[in-house]
Image (cartoon, rainbow, N blue to C red; front, side):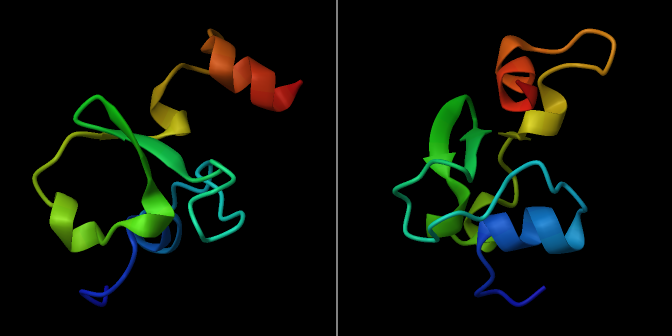
Length: 77
């Protein structure tokens, strides 16, 4: 990936983690929210290269298909 790629683009296009969505691309809608080291950030507003060694949790990591996290269940509903 390009060193100028956003965390959102790397998650979706290079890692196949498509649960994190591209909405407004300006950090206002929250569709790209991920947890980085336990803190919420907008993945569209940060460069992936800045988070190489960080713990990144996307919607895919919150629960399992047979035991959904409440946030995952809310997205489905």
